[in-house]
Every structure is written in structure tokens, then in C-alpha cells.
Length: 73
Image (tube, rainbow, N blue to C red):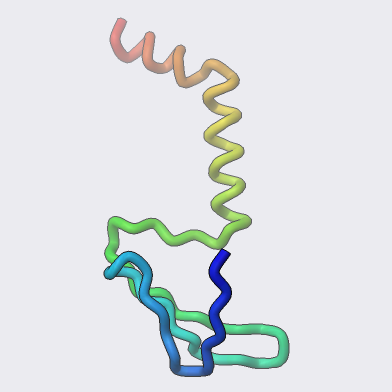
């Protein structure tokens, strides 16, 4: 993991097309702004984990395979 120090108003760039800017620092909370192309999904980690778990459950349940079978006859 790369750890960087940034002050309010400073930014960092990831992969030439994602910019993360420190908007506000209040106590232990930091507000950030993220500029990224529309095709780059940006999620809070807890939401991303929920999506991953839901996708895994769908694959494990066999519903996806049944759906494909029904789709292609």
C-alpha cells in the first residue's frame, strides 16, 4: 500500500484519468472528491464488498446458469 500525505486542496492522480482531491478535513474525517470517467465505477468499499458477495451468491445458487439455459433454450 502506498501512503501519501495531502493537505486540503491537494490532489493525486491515478492511471492518468482519476483525480482524488482533499476537499475538507474535520477532526478524524476527511472529505474527498473523485473525478473519473463515467466508465470507471467508483464505490465505497463496504458497498463494493456487498456487490461482490451478492454476485458470488448468485453464481453459487445456480440461478445464473438456469437463466442462461432458459435464455438459449
